[in-house]
Image (cartoon, rainbow, N blue to C red; front, side, top):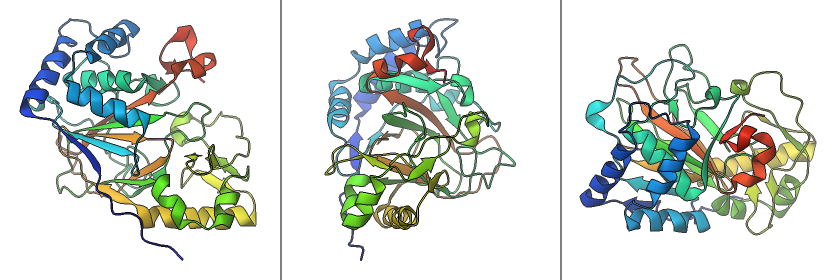
Length: 327
């Protein structure tokens, strides 16, 4: 029988107007050149150096989150600059990304450097380090970043040997009705809801997680693997509701119990402009509630960046020691 999950409030970091203004100044300095490109290694180097200029309260909060992401596995930072007055219409095409330096892209990249290093996957959104998460006409029912129906729980790129350690989601615009909510469920709150038998089964290599459609169809069949790995008292997790398949009857039962526990332990956060959600992708699954886009240029618009705490581990997947995983 499920027990109630902890009702601990979301971890929040409220920036003062002075902090916001200082971050805005540092971000704009990264956008001062005529040819500042987000994906250029030299621009990322500048963003890494600029991290040291950010307010101590922000750097301290992120450093603590990197060391331990808490019971919820999420940190929401309020009050970041996104340059509201200069925002163009919300993109409405698949694979939309941010190539040119903007205030929001600079904020995301600096914070990703504070967590480790920004990274992307060549097969997804053409390897852009800063990606748009927007509704796209015709994709309403798609359970992915271009859809507007319920997005089910998943760890980002759970199939990949070098999945992101952290997912960064910065809100530029909310949805019209203010109903779209980021749903998160942390394994630290979910584990107590699971039976010992289920935890044991989830730690066995009896599951397959397939790549999402955005990674193409020429990927080799993945090998069976466990969903839970590492320390039994605080394990890591790799799963995606619509992409993880159980291979045995007991694995099917365990996966069903896990998904039920996710729904029971879930927290929902409605992001406002300037809110950044940092998700510990190793222990926290995330999704999104449904919403109704209007495709009028002012739809919901998040920007997303991934971060790896130890870029060196993925060296064999990155050409020229860059930030893009090419396979």
